[in-house]
Image (cartoon, rainbow, N blue to C red; front, top):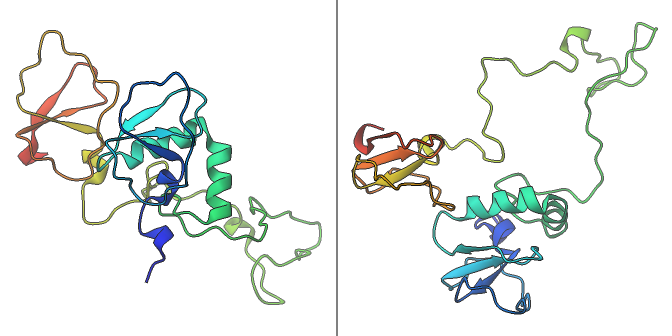
Length: 205
């Protein structure tokens, strides 16, 4: 059974405070106790921001908040995730022991390596097997998001639900949008990445 820290987005809720409004106060409210589950509040705000950054506290917003933490507060975010063994977007738990990444193996003039990189006293890799890049035919996961089997989450996250395919004359992309993880309850969807608002039928997407 997974521990509590790996069942919910603890790496997101740990860094936000519950809010009743998105209006910026004259003075920042106190951080309050650390959260590890979704709060019962209409909005949340970033505790690490010196300014005022808020989001709606709804299902599907954790990916947006996590992206903000990684881009704006990456060093502090990753440090706390390591120290408190938080979920960190589904990655394996951090180890408290220091580790050194292996990027390559130093070759020596002798036919043997000074330290075998694999278990066994006489086990040495062929030079062609050292520090090879991943094969081009193997799909790599999206940055920061593990691949999810059985769903088209890699498609829905880039779409927005629409009630019509007709583009309003004064339409502009909204500043913040919900990130979808499954097929929405809408007749049409539109591409978030296309500024001109391309749309399609949600039943065939």
